[in-house]
Each structure stands twice: as structure tokens, then as C-alpha cells.
Image (cartoon, rainbow over all chains, first blue to last red; front, side):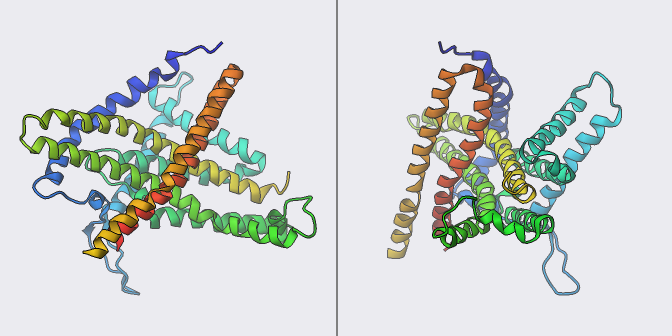
Length: 289
Length: 75
């Protein structure tokens, strides 16, 4: 018998929809400003603006401090603060902050041990840092007037290529030439081996691209969708027509629902990025186990 | 003018992969609901797996969306 358990989804009401409504309400002045007289492009929110300019003295590159860099700094500082404050006065019965930091820590630890076994333990700090950076980057990006740095392909691609290269190096150091057997599933007929080797090699090399584009595309699509619906609501309200203005409730409702979905996606994408990193690491650590 | 029109048509065609993602999500969730109905004690574990694969399947559709954005705004 299927039993519908309402409590299972009860958390959605309290923890996601209410903040989404608040976020929508706060961001409305901004939307009306952006959608105003001339409809702005929905991807204008991703423009990188310089906060103060820095020129690289040696090669002349532009390494200015931008709004993307500001939110990267914030995304590294906020989890650091939460974790330090949480465990500063550690007690047997944890308070709110201590619970949060312990939950985050245990969540990532379980994830890593489940996927890689004990061999992955030395890499815990890297995986944990990665998870926190992406998680807080995504979540801070959901705040009104903020900037989502994970919606820039160069940032996610750089993260992915670092993971790809280090995983390959770890694999080669641990297994030497044996690492090549990763590209050849055991028990393959001799005729198929060259073909399969090439296919596996390509699918291995495509990993950083799929890893980075997944995170980037999710963030880009979600935020653009929100902006498009926001523009729609603003245009309907701004029309001044008695018949059109009440219809604006529909896009506003859609924004509230989508903000809730976006918060979910923000957490989910951080989780997926971390899980895939663990799976890739497992490939390099334990060949054919 | 014709390039503009071609751009819009191309962007519209480029989001066609979302259809595949929609079918994929439908198959995924039908499978999850089926398994939950058969074995309710596995529900929690299945839900975690469902979320992971939800993100993986959704991403394939979003690749098409990114191409559409590129066509619309990058050229």
C-alpha cells in the first residue's frame, strides 16, 4: 500500500517557499528598475563590473577586482566564519551554528568515504572546500542584488580542469602505466579493444567540459528564467491597464515557485559537482575494484 | 533583418533538446515512483539517488539552452 506522507514534504513549505516569497518581494524594486522604460536584456545580470582596477605589473594583464571576485571572496569567508564560530565553543549538546557546521562536515565526509573508501581520506579537505565554495557561491547568488560567480563558465571550467588534471596525476602516481587500464574494461574481446580504448579515452577527456558546463548552465538558465518572468510581471504592472494588471499575479507566483526551485538546484548542483569529483577520484584511486 | 530572423529561428531550434530532457525526467521519476511503491523501505535512499540523477538529466537539456543563449546574445 502506498502511504502518502505529508510530513516528508512539509519542509518545503516552511524552509523554501517563505524565503522565496521574501526574496521575490525584496527584488521587486530592482526588477521594476531593470524592466522600466526599455526592457533590458535578461542576461545583463551576468555582466562583470570592475570595482577597482588593478593592472598586472609584469605582463600587463587586467586583473581588476570585480563583482565576481567580491562574491568569490564572500563565498570563501562566509563558510569559514560559520565553521569557526560554530566550533569555537564546542559543546556536547550542539547549538544551531555548531549543528550546521557538524552536519556540513559529516555530510561531505560520508559522501567521500562512500564513494572512494579509505583511500580518499587524504583528499577530504579539498573536497570539503570545493563543496563549500560552490554551495555558498550558489546560495549567495540567490540573494537579491547579488552576483552568482558560478554562472561564469571560466570559473567553473577552471575548477573542473584543476580537478581533472590532479585526478589524472594522482592516478598516474599511484598506478603508473597500470592507470591506462582505466580505459579498458576487463573482459573486452581483442577485436573491440582499440575501438573501446578510443571511446573511453574521449569520454575521459570530455569530463571537465561536462562537469563545468553542468554547473554553469544550471545557474545561467535559472537566473535568466527568473529575470524573464520578472520582466513579464513588471511589463504587465507597468501597462497601467485594468485588465492586464491583475494578470501580473501569475508571473509573480511563478517567480516564487521558481526561486524555491532555484534554491533547491543551488544545493543540488553543489552536491552533484562534489559527488562527481569523488567518483572521478575513485576511478584514479581504486582501479577496477 | 534576415540574419536577425535566422538567429531567432536558430535559437528556437536549439532548445529542442529540452524535449529529450523532459522525456528523460519523466522516465526517471516514473521509475523512482515505481520502485518506491514496490519497496517503501527504500524510499529515503531512492530519493537521494533521484535527486542526483535529476540534476544529471536536467543538465543535458540545459546544454541546448546554453547554445540557444549563445546564438541569441553572443553573436
